[in-house]
Image (cartoon, rainbow, N blue to C red; front, side, top):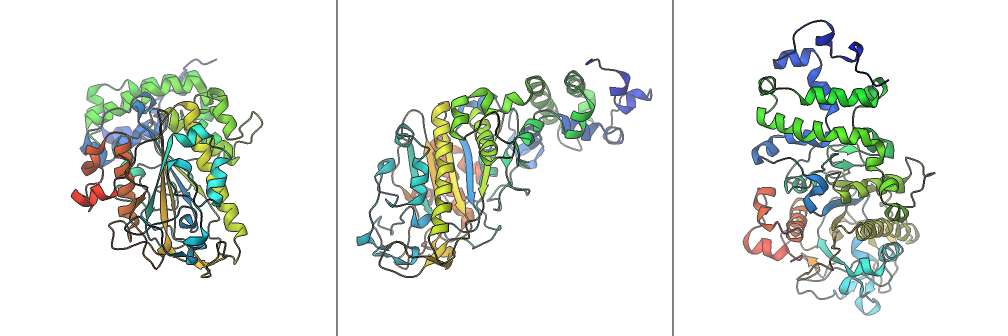
Length: 472
């Protein structure tokens, strides 16, 4: 049992042919596709042209202490601006929030959580967050809003920042960046500025468990010892053979990919699914998500909690989570308040997980558009239609050593018409808003000097860049 036999050999070895040395021979014998499936998926990102040009090195274990970058997309057009009050260009409250369900400012009260008067005291998102995040967690968290207009009910807003985060060094040491929707970004948003490496789409814990070694087909054909042997076979390609793969990429980078991914992956194969399972590795963190031995593999808490665990542990790169049902303008506040509360719960779970694990985390909350209420002086007016001009994104930055310092809690501003001010750099552009988010993330992880390389096409520079930096 576990012996590497002739039937497990590559086709070229079975037939007595010499080992393939050219790209054509590798392809004809199926060696290149095998290598792609056998090596840890995260290393495949090293093959993208922008990463080649940057000359990135192997991702180190535990993400080299870089804060996890997690996006939560609320698909459909959530009213984030009715939960976290936008201010005008001078940082003052608007005279009225009647079109975003808040009434006049005389009828509004704000909560003092996170060291600011940011959230509305009756915010369902804040209420949900506080059911999971303890006071020490809240005390270690800073919150900043981004006032930005976006297209309603659209998957074409360029909000996704995972490509830029990847260029900044957010890459898993063992598994790749993770997403929840089957597309290029892993959520219902287009990439801003930099296309990320293809994410592993996680709809079940089994997707994570299977990703640590091989494709499903190979897992069914080979036992653990055989998989380790074949990984070593691929990793043992000598420099001459590796040089023949230059049509795919440079020899140096292919060798780096093999050394970084193939060899490290041996340990992951031996560890099995326990290597990526929060229930095995951190019971307190698993409890935050309601994960027990009997939790179904496709349960949302099991899926989201496992993705977040691996991001915090440094096993995975960026994580893109998505919640649906935020197109909630049904002439009530009941459904919308319930969905906002659900979003808050997930944010609270992420923050509390980071505190338990003693890790920093950066959460980026997005949505496609927003909603409008009947214009009322009294808070609580029902949602009646879409209104992407009243859009907003949110940043949460948690540090286990204490709340990160900020110079303010709003990027951009709102006008008296209760819309995101398009005269600001971020006001009318989700793409630039995402760049502003990355600029703040880089400040948070003390890599501010990387911004020009991470977002080379950004209009944010000089005073404009300084104006969007709130995490200091």
